[in-house]
Image (tube, rainbow, N blue to C red; front, side, top):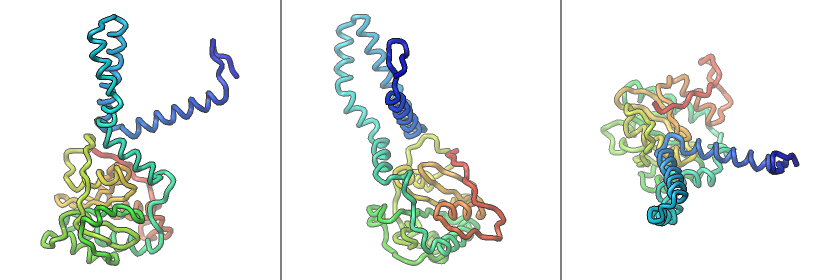
Length: 271
C-alpha cells in the first residue's frame, strides 16, 4: 500500500483505476460522432443543476428535478437505445478478437470483385456489396432475393445494371458466395457523414456500425469507389488500393505482383 494523503493506494487500486480509465476511453470512442455526446452533456448539466438547487435550498424546484432524475435510468436507455444496441451487438460478435471471414478461395473472390468494380466504376453503375461473416445478416438475406451463386464479375455487373429488377439494394456475399440481392440496409444517423454522400454510402456505414462486415460501394454519380468498416467510411480508392484493402481484410496471402506495393491500412474518414 502506498499512502497518498489520507488514502492507501495499492496495486489493486491501480489496476482498478486503469480498468475504469480504459472503459471510459472505450465509451468515448463508442459514442464519438453521435448525438449521444450532446445528450450526455445535457444529462450531466441536469445533475449539476440539481445539486446546486439542493445546496441553495429551493425545495420545490429540487422536488421537481428529483422526480425527473428518478426516471433518469429509463430515460438513458430510451435516449441511447441505438448506441446500446450497437455496443451489445459488437460484444456479442467479439469484434476485436474474431476474424471476419473464412480465407478459403479468397484469391478468386477478390479477383472477381476487382474485375466487377472496374466495370461498375468505369460505367458509373451504382453498387453496394456487403461481405458478411458466417451465419450473420440472416434477417436481411431472408428479406432480399435469394441467389446462392458463385461469385462472378459478370453476374455482379448484371445485378447492378439499372434495367435489372435487382439493382436497387445491396448484394450480400457470405462464405465466398453471392447469397442474396436487393437487400435493404439500415441508414446511418451519424451526423459526421458528409452531405456529398448519398443513400448507398449511408446504408454502408449503417450496416457496418452494428455488424462485423466489410462493405464496398460504387457511386452512381461519379463512379467513385468507397469501403466501409466498423462504422467508418473511406472514399476515393483506386482499384489498386481496393485490392490491397481486400487482400488485408480477407487474409489473402498472395499479393498481385503487378501492383508493386504492399497492403496499406487506409485512413478511415467520413468527410
